[in-house]
Length: 128
Image (cartoon, rainbow, N blue to C red):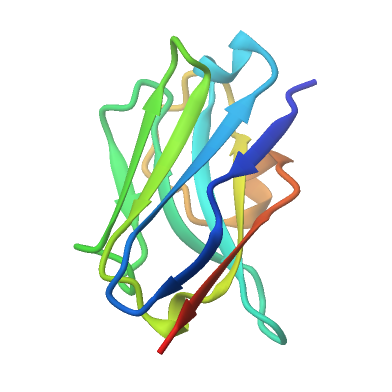
C-alpha cells in the first residue's frame, strides 16, 4: 500500500510563495496519477491540481490557475505544488492523493473518489 507524506506548509503573507512536497513510500507511485486537494474550515475538500502518471499532463482548478504549478519527480517518488501569489482564501489543509488505474490516460482527475491513497495533510495559512 502506498503511503503519502506531505510537507512544506506554513504561515506566509499574502503575495508570498510556498512549495509543498508529497513523498510516496513506494516506487509504484510512479504508475499513478497524483493530485492536490485542500479543505478549509467548514468547507468541503476541493480539487486544486493534478498531474498524470507520466508528468506530461497537468490540470488545475480555476481558482489557482496561473498561480500554482504541480509537478512530479518519479525518480524521487515525490510530487510538488509550487504556490505563488498566495491569497488569504488559499488558507486550508492541503492533501496529496494518488489513485486511478495504473497508467491512467484519461482527463478526469478532479473527483475525490478517483483517488485511493491520501496523505495526512499540511496546513497552509495566508495572512492578509
